[in-house]
Image 1 (tube, helix red, strand yellow):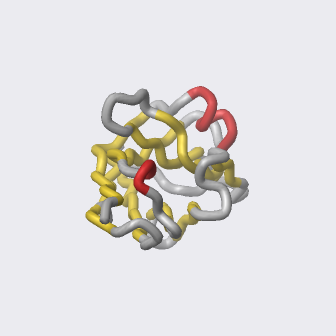
Image 2 (cartoon, one colour; image 1 turned 90 degrees about the horizontal axis):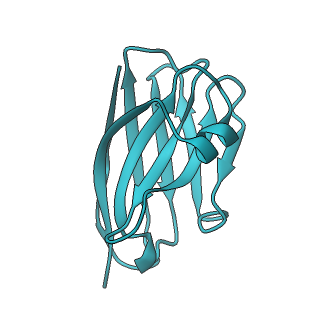
Image 3 (cartoon, rainbow, N blue to C red; image 1 turned 45 degrees about the horizontal axis):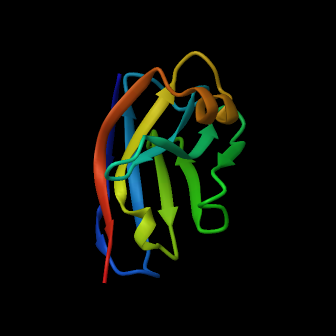
Length: 125
């Protein structure tokens, strides 16, 4: 199982980025998959999660209305579209999946079985 995240970078406040996570070793037609982040000096936290069974999503309050998680089943890829970025969105973003259930909420609350490497997002003027 591999989760390869990409798309991080430096962006100004109010800008946008799209993160991608290519999954291999399993198919995005059942597992819950999502994005977590860890800011400097803070604990890792859930951002947005999605059920690849029914596309139900769960977002943290801090990103609702600004971030959108989606998947491309044919490409076995999950995306995180991040708009109206803020300085406090600065963090390493991790793609993660739970291979034994498809609940986006459970993934958000309880964490994954598998983690990918992170991609750094820096929001700064």
